[in-house]
Length: 445
Ligand code: PA5
Image 1 (cartoon, rainbow, N blue to C red):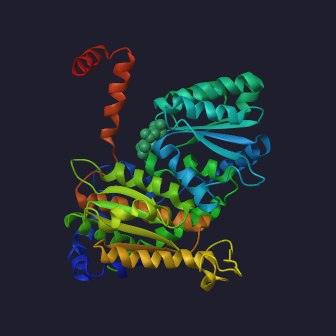
Image 2: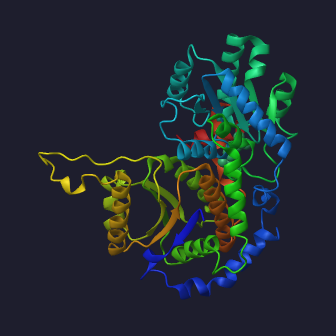
Image 3: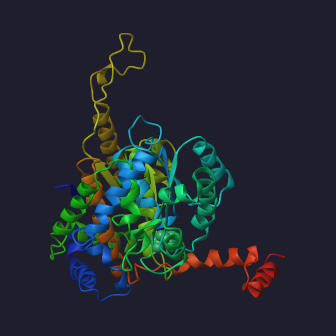
């Protein structure tokens, strides 16, 4: 079993009778997902994706990854939101946040087009100088400003460096199967393209080509990742919400929300899970934060943040609960050395595995935060393998959809994302936005 829900640290905060009393509502929300009968049901392709994916494209992804690995030192992945977070989360979780600087026989993978920062882009261009580069541009709509601007710059760079034909071999586009400017442009240019399925939204797309191509380029076993997701799908098909950990998690979140615990903090004790938390924040924030509702998804990495946000969590406003990812095993063994002088008084730890100290820090923190009035849900995960990552992805995606329906929102749209874009276009002088620009300028006087 790749994941176990441990509710021990909810004692005194959420009783099992409360989860039981939500059983019908939880079941109904789950049935809404399974029967595809709720709002946004056109975007439920991710539910069966782990077993029902395009096998021909999957083979093409592996093939392209092999070519990319041979062709370049750096793969630049251009995308924003759901078009990059999953891949980055997987690469850091399974390998390391330092993947790019560690010795390896796979290309460095840099993510670009996820901000409008001139410095960030310029720094990446400097890193790319003198290196062989491939580009994977990812945009479902094909029109998102941040990746589009970045793609212009990298396309120009690749065409100057390798010529149009050389660039064609090195540019891979992941986008809609038929619509959008990126698709038509890629077809015109002869780039190899991969598909973001119509029925899978950006934040649910990590197990499509969106995530799989960059992940495979980093040498990660994407078969194992899909298997993890497929096993989670099987496991969480259990209809009884009280016997299904994924549904229990959704119900517990709903109970927390009703009790005024409106901030959920995802806690990891491994820096490698930091980007997983960023992916999770987008998944839950964009899915639930609408109609003036929704838990606010936050994240911390402990013990690092115990020396910053730890104070707030222990004694600040009591409106939060924590969901802790407990990774039970470490891929490496690091033992604390003996110091004959025992200057720091830590010889009682000599010979102890650092990972065991880390997990003891977790236990101490769970108890302290419980004492401070903070409920904790613990998700015990075996390891940081590709299999576990796929399992976690499916667990969180399904729980998110069920939670969203329990909350009464459409978990698959993101109408609020448009607001800043319209203002930005108007202020930048995009044709057609003249009236809006005048109104905004008036407001800023
Ligand atoms: O989850 C989502 O749908 C969004 O975060 C999108 O992934 C993000 O806005 C990028 O969109 P696109 O892939 O169309 O460029």
